[in-house]
Length: 366
Image (cartoon, rainbow, N blue to C red; front, top):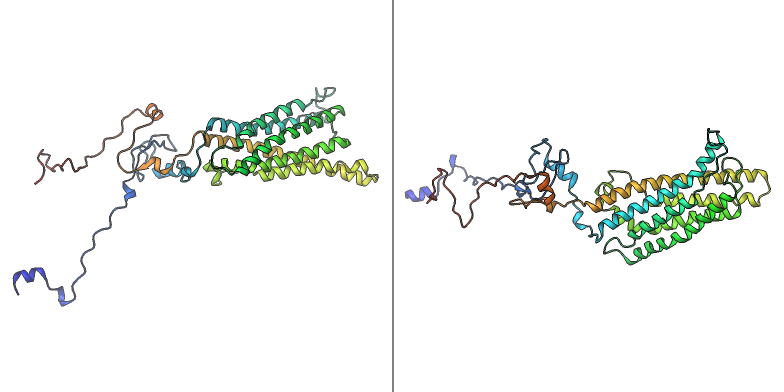
């Protein structure tokens, strides 16, 4: 056997079979070299993490970059439709909920005055009962104006959902008429007297029941498009905060309407027991439905503020902040916040520029 044969076919050690060739280490994951190519303020201290690796730490507070990514980046942000008029849409949904809160709170104002007069609060005796009719109309008009933003907030919405939202805006007109007539009748009678002897007229009971049913129908018609806007808030979509369900508010409006219908029973019943039981059940249903509807309106206002913030300042996607290679240029806002230039990149050979030797000489390696 020639030396060449011995070199090319070495004998296995210990007379055994030939050993398997040594495995090369697995290549590094490409995610390790990923960098933040876009502006991304640290969720804890606000330091711009642009240019750092996704596995590094914030140089200002030491928090992990991944913690900021999990808190700020929305993986579904690229799937959401673009809103053509974000400022008008954000203002509209806030006005929609704010008007509902105004209607609810102003409706309680005469009842609060009745309670204060009943318990003998100083300065309330002899004072006139406040009328909430005009304030309720202004709040309802504000809510109807804001509800226009729910008709078609962005493209790609089903036509029937847009028609539902438009019909809900139209139903604000009969709702306003019912509430206006109810408050006129209530003021002419000195109030419904819930805390003494509740003896409403037939017109008051019918108007209250009609108003409750209209509120429930309006909420049900606005729900589909409102849910599309809720999906823009990652905090609400992932369940990190409690949000008011519109179905619960519609149910509270139905309870309010049922209280008005129960008020019709004492007008036709002759048995004192039935009359008193109906009065108690009617007042309880009106108080429970009105209270739940008011709490739901306040919760909807808080949710609308969160949604408006998500519309005006949408969440960034992972593609916008994570990339390979040199980070992109800073935005104008971040140039004002952080005017320092980005750190220089280490030298990397390119096909047009040969590699430099380790000794620092200018000539390339042979």
